[in-house]
Amino acid sequence: MSQMPQLSACPSCEEPLESGDLFCGACGFDLSAVPPRPDVSPNGSARSGSAVPDGDPSEWPDAPEVDSSDTPVPTHLPTDLRGTDSAGGQLPAAPEAVDPEAVAPEHPDGLSEPDEYPLPAPAAAGTAPAAATDPRTDMPDPTPPAGTKLCVACRSGRVDPDGYCENCGHAQPRERDHMEQELDAVAAVSDRGLRHHRNEDAFAISAAALSDGSPAVVAIVCDGVSSATRPDEASLAASRAANESLLAALPRGTHPQQAMHEAILAAADAVNALAAEPASAREHSPHQNAPACTLVGAVVANGLLVVGWVGDSRAYWVPDDRSGPTVRLTEDDSWAAQMVAAGLMNEAEAYADERAHAITGWLGADAYELEPHTASFKPDRAGVVVVCTDGLWNYAEAVEEMADAVPADAADRPLHSAQVLVGHALDGGGHDNVTVAVVPFPYVPQGAGSA
Image (cartoon, rainbow, N blue to C red; front, side, top):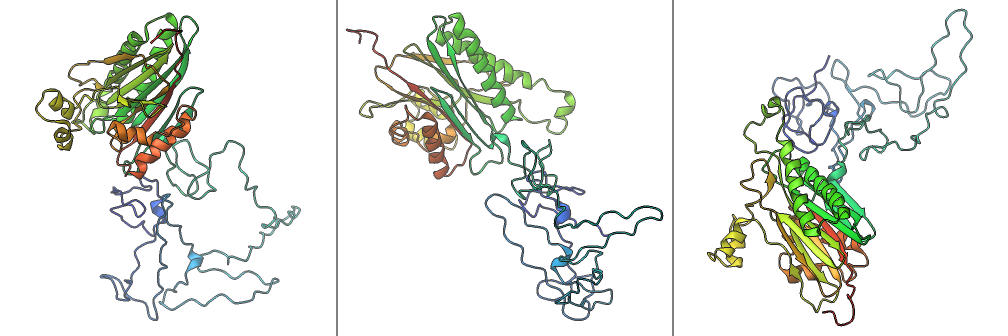
């Protein structure tokens, strides 16, 4: 029985492999489909320890490159190549024409030729012969049942609960690789980016009502800290906890700024709870930090704009009338921001330093001290609030750059605007996960004579 070739790296994504792996843990490539190493090198010389059969050796076909969707190289069937017999001679080619009345010739690998069909086995004595079937007309229905998820690689295999194709073994894209959501007054988009192997960002958007029945809109964006363990779980837990806290507090009449403060504390508790894992879970990564993430949120309610944050995710105010000022509403918890605040560097010098993006505040069990930041604003004109991770603002850091990147009709088309902003980051290089929420702020004058 032939053994599966020993590989040190996945032939599809080049991820390192361990001995005995049947599938790549990164992309799900079926390692058993990799052909064994031929005895003859591409230049026709014998490899060490192998014998070259007499005659011209069979050549391996050039494998097509993997495309941008990470579709694996298709597996070659035994019928794709002419083989050699045990003496090393070439096997005879298939006849050009086949007598339909003749029995299908036996293939050296025990397979019938592509255009032939095996004869049915003779019926057992005393039983009626089975009705003849034609494989060409009795093929199973190619249309899968409604709701069946098909593989993005082979387009035919069903996806098992673990996220792998039952046909080709290809790992399917994670649900969080690209997410979009739109409500009447808010929209958000999150994307894995072009360099990361998973999306460690998360968001939550919702609509609520204040105690007086007036509407309120909530947007929460979280960015997992990549140097910590399970950052994707941290960001998801924080965004959900903060959103649920706000939806519970606002209808009770809690002031939106106080509700935002409480929501950040709830998010911190949710992330801290992730650190209480079984001791056995730490055996494989004992030196990793506890799960951690940053958070930024916005609430638009009754003419008031409230923002809250911990870390370096940001919120920007962009007026519909771009003749008005675009304003950054948050201050980063980062090394660069501390240097500027202390007067030790100007902003250009600080952000040019390699330590600029080292965060000094985050949600997590090993945070130095949790200091939720909140602020309230009363804009005097209509506009939008852009709530985002550094995956966006790294490509539009200055307020003027952000104003230029936000579409002019952002208040009317928040989902389209969030898509455009994510595209702006991807076009700029997409070095990080990128998440953007766009919250329109409709300005309604409070009455004659009001400022």
